[in-house]
Amino acid sequence: MSNDNDPNVSDDAPAGEPGDERTGAPPPPPPSEPGAIGASSFTPPTPPLWRRIPLRLLIGGPILLLIVIVGWWTSRGETSADDLQAGDCFAIPEADEFERVTNQSCDEPHEGEVLVVVNMPAGSGWPGSGTQTAVNAAFDTCDNQIATLDLIDENIPNDAGVNIFFTGSAEWNGGDRELVCYIYSPSMLTGSVLAP
Image 1 (tube, one colour):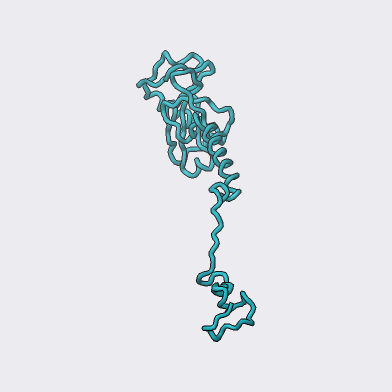
Image 2: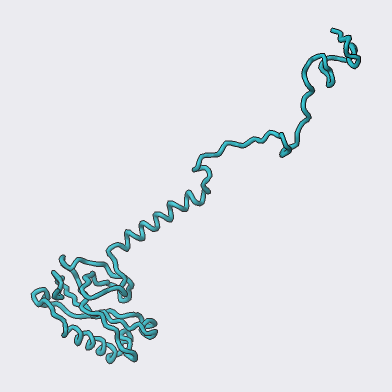
């Protein structure tokens, strides 16, 4: 095909080369650099949520939750020995030193009940030292406090006795000289011994 009207077009130029106006197609655009204006920006699809959570969180999260649940389960029904108050019923710990006691309902058979909590005066000897003077002073303090209480005699078995819990040596010497005076019975107590 010949174009007589355009002097720039020659019949000798091969078809399809840049500048070939015989095909009617514009020349292809030059390749663009990544990030240049007009460059194609490909956005990969967003992975599902579970694939975006770090592996340590997927594994560590459930383990942490399990630890919290086990801790709650094992501590339920327990009270810190520091939090015992008059009228609390509990199972007497077998260990000589402990931090927690197991709560028991006062309406059900129980091993012990707190009668009074006393703070011993400064200069009082630590009852755990084994000196008879310190032990006697602690029991005398409990006996004097218990003598002022209104007790329900029919709820006190014949084999009942009074005993004490006290803070550790470091706490005692640091000023925390709390003494927990409680009643216990090997045959179990039934009902509170403290009058309402």
